Length: 346
Image 1: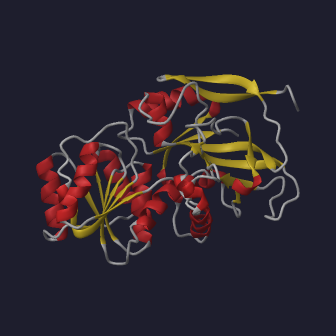
Image 2 (image 1 turned 60 degrees about the vertical axis):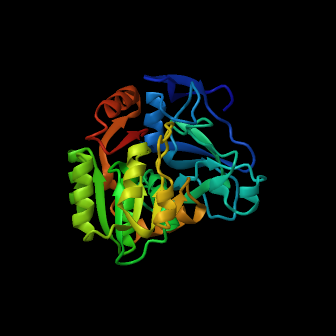
Image 3 (image 1 turned 90 degrees about the vertical axis):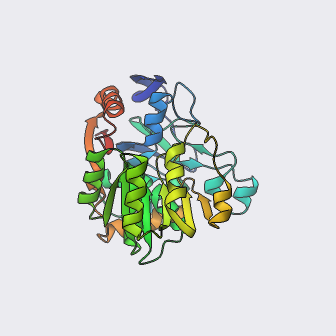
């Protein structure tokens, strides 16, 4: 197969996406050749398109929310065979740093996420190490492309150890925020979703049956909403899923004394004049949440397979591969109304 060409989606520079002809990959021992079926445009992909991703370099093939069909694979002890529809773990860890040696592979100090620090999966074919491929257990390909973002959200909720009956505020009604709300609800929490975009907020609240919604139209409206929803106590857990200084401050302000704050959002910006003593005053537990673990993928495939969540409800727009430049442009222009955007490679 050497020398054969295939098409790939490439972000040449901020604001410029092209369909390119590149060399089709040849798998190495221990790898599988996969034919891409569906891929989700992540917030980090959109950030790369906008020039706002803290970690990306250009040009870059984006994409790490993947569903694919196995084309070629060696005999293995995982039961993976040609023709199976699978998803993949896209976070490549070094295996030798202190984090990796302790099993915290998602926090590898030299992490390389597909589509960010290394080439992504938005191509007709990709190769993946066999140990990073997970059996989709019969789930539809489009659903499997949504497992990875669900893992990001689920990992953050797990970091906070959300308990049944606790009040949880998720700031951000994008894909990661909505799925964090869904994960918290699945754990029995009373969940409030918050955003500045009313259309997206209403869609998330109604579609996924969340307990409450809070339109963050002004600092006064936010403060009033938090007080009314918690009887003045504050939320047990607040989850930041935007990546802005003001939304992090929202989470600090809205959490109760002795509460937990989880930061999932990624930003290039600093937070100025932060009154850090509030962490001491409230005795807060503040958690960073990065990537996800193998266990997150396996648990969520089983959860979705059991009918616990209809992930495809989060998809608002689907584009064919040839229309990827249009997909990125329209998503960037309408991010307040579009939730999950998926590329169809079939």
